[in-house]
Image (cartoon, rainbow, N blue to C red; front, side):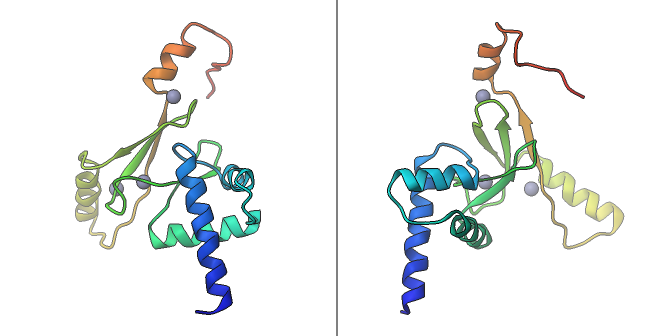
Length: 145
Ligand SMILES: [Zn+2]
Ligand SMILES: [Zn+2]
Ligand SMILES: [Zn+2]
C-alpha cells in the first residue's frame, strides 16, 4: 500500500464518521465543520473530493436541496434503488422505494421506445412534526411562487 492510499483511507474514514454523526443529509461544509469538531485534519476540498468518490461508489447518496445545494447522507436501504422525501424545515429525510414510480418510469420508456433509462426524483415538503410547529406562528412561512 502506498502512502497516498493510506491517507485516502483515513480521509474516507473521517468523512464517513462525520456522516454518521450528523442526522439525515448534510452539506459538505457541515461535514467539514463536524470533522474539525472531531479534530480531524481533512480540508474542505478533500471533503468534496472524498464525498464525490463515495457517491460514485454508491455508499453515499447525494440529493439536492430546493436551493440547489448538494447534500450528502447515508441511506439504510442503499445500495438498492430508492428516492428521497425531504423536509425543507428540519431536513428529515425518508427513503422511498417500491411505490409505483419505477413502474411508471418503465412504462413511459416502453411507450416512447426509450431504453437505458435513468431518472432523478426528489420530493420536498414539510414533515408532520414541523407542520405542527409552524402552524401556530405565521412568521417564516412565506408562500412563494
Ligand atoms: Zn438514498
Ligand atoms: Zn421537518
Ligand atoms: Zn427510481
